[in-house]
Length: 91
Image (cartoon, rainbow, N blue to C red; front, side):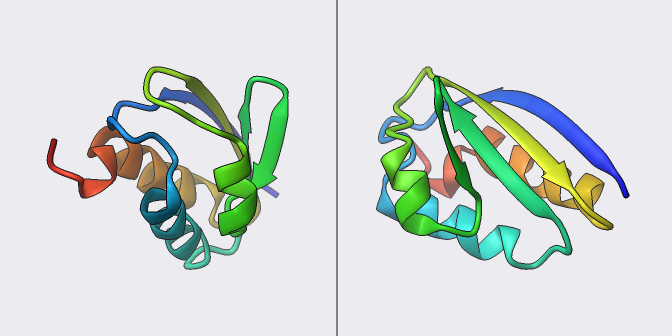
């Protein structure tokens, strides 16, 4: 089983708000991997919109992402791209 870990910075102005959390949750459901995000001391699985919003990930915060499973590498790449594209919010 593959395990990958990476830290990203939230760059979009609104942070991990409802629309961004929904995009992330839908994206993570496309992969055979368990994905966990941690902001400060709070963690949530990437497929839980409520859990992601409760992380209160605001702009500039570090997010540690751990993906575990058969498609962990692909999932990590897709999630990191989503973060670097600022959740396609075009600010």
